[in-house]
Amino acid sequence: MKTCIKCKKYKHLSDFFKNKSTKDGYTVYCKPCFNLNTKAAKNLKRYGMSTEEITKLKETGCELCGVKNNLHVDHNHRTGSFRGILCTNCNRGIGHLKDSPDLLRKAIAYLESKGNYSTWQS
Image 1 (cartoon, rainbow, N blue to C red):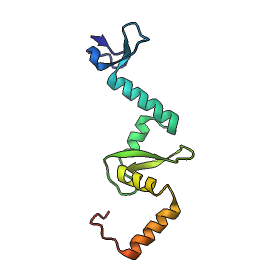
Image 2: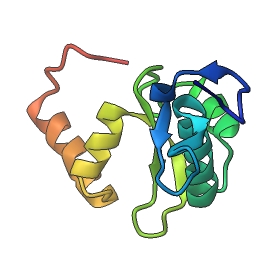
Image 3: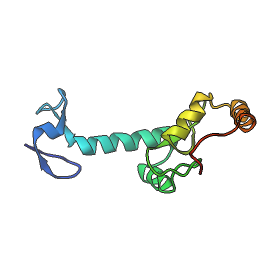
Image 4: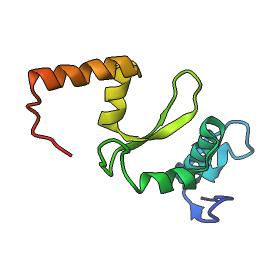
């Protein structure tokens, strides 16, 4: 048993990652605290935003279709800068079209000329 230095809870060793460089062989943070700390650092480094800021943005849902689950940070693949919050499907759709506005316009023209038979509508 060990106490996490972040949440101050006394937990079983299986709740900590192994770390050979520490005296007891385990990280000082429990797994949930470690993961939150790592995610926060990644968000700040990559997008210049805190996890709280990103969570707040996710409350409004996907910027394209409005879905409120399976949301991800969309970013410019050249610069790495934050673009917005998208659901998995919209994010993949843009990615499969190589982040190209020209390809997206062609896809729109294709659907409009061939007919949109989707049962999904916003």
